[in-house]
Length: 180
Image 1: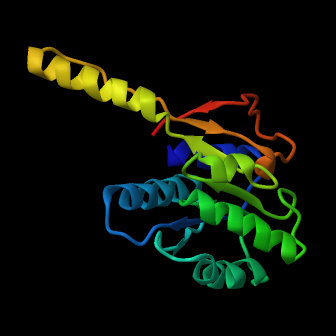
Image 2 (image 1 turned 60 degrees about the vertical axis):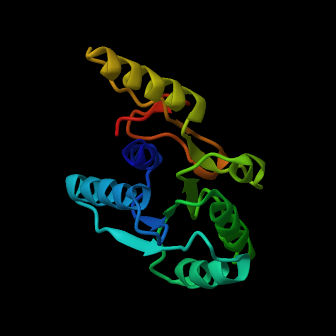
């Protein structure tokens, strides 16, 4: 999932991508960071990570985002695990005079009403919870029956205007299936 989003940003000419994952020690945050670090190593990019606690209020989240976006060495693409903080990053970027997506592309690891209704709408991963639940039931039933089942991931990258730089590197799809 993270890889699909990173490849989407790379296809839009991202040169420096920062991942802001959550602070809780759980599989979601660990795997997001691991996938990001593996992608950076594969692509020869310098990893830039930070943490943005899920329980922070807007002011505390802004205190993390403001210095990152004001830094002269700021990234040109930002992936925020939490959709409501991705929307806040877009607000802060606009207030600092950054043009989204020209100066800064923003994406979220979760597609929610926050990402869809933000101004501008934010690129996000659609986790397809309903399809994921169907797959889980299919896997459980197959295991109970003693048969093999294939595990697929139904999540997809939903490109929106926060990453709508002109396409580059041959990317043509508007919906990018996840590859891991």
